[in-house]
Image (cartoon, rainbow, N blue to C red):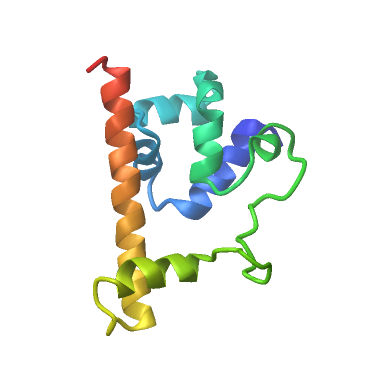
Length: 129
């Protein structure tokens, strides 16, 4: 298994469509198809961003060494901020009556919006705007 195999194994697990991955990364879907079909190796310049999107490390993508997925903070350490802490601080400040399910749904919406804005910014940078 090489880097491309590892990348697309994780892409297929996380994204419904390859286009969704391309949008999140800020590249055109045709470019991602070229990577998958081994017609381009330009994915290398995006490895840090790819690793973040796929919740892994560049080391894992390149070598297969280390954990496949980054571990979420356990919350057991003093001073550790968990995702639940962030959700509660962010969304309960807006509406303290939100249920945990509603916070989770809003968190997913917020993450999707952040991915969209990051992709939009990368497109503008790439296009020289």
